[in-house]
Length: 214
View 1 (spheres, rainbow, N blue to C red):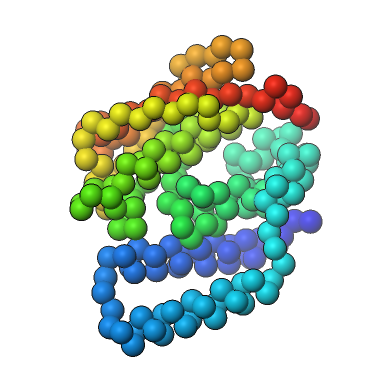
View 2: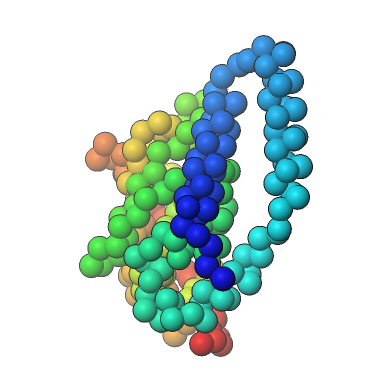
């Protein structure tokens, strides 16, 4: 059953507020009393969330992929569909996941162009993004491209080259394009730039399932 749009938007808003809290917690100090108040509030709200019905992403996705909306390609046009299907709960760039980053993507003729700004919670060495976070963002953009190609595919191999420190708090642009196909394999190349400088590149090999289903 489709969830009301206002509930979907409320879930997005709550995730955004929690994400902001995560970055604020990492980047700022607070006195002992304030930390205790935060801990008590977080514990209370965690209990309240667990009292609600569980979310089954596998069932949500299955229902979506069996729907007319999937056959019409509605996923690329409606954020509500992505939420109903559970895709926006995903770990790296899910807007409904408070521990995720916020990756905005546009489909272009030959691929995907995405942007992201990594906050304090993504820091590795002081002043720069953690390499694992950068790799994860590349992986998620790879998935966006497979959606663009209308393929169901999973990452088989991901090779990232770090060419310069990836900054925090600055707009990063990721471009992804298909380089070739070989049977069930899809070969994808990506670049991450900021202020016109390439700071990292990625080559990914994605594999389509032997029996992708309906």
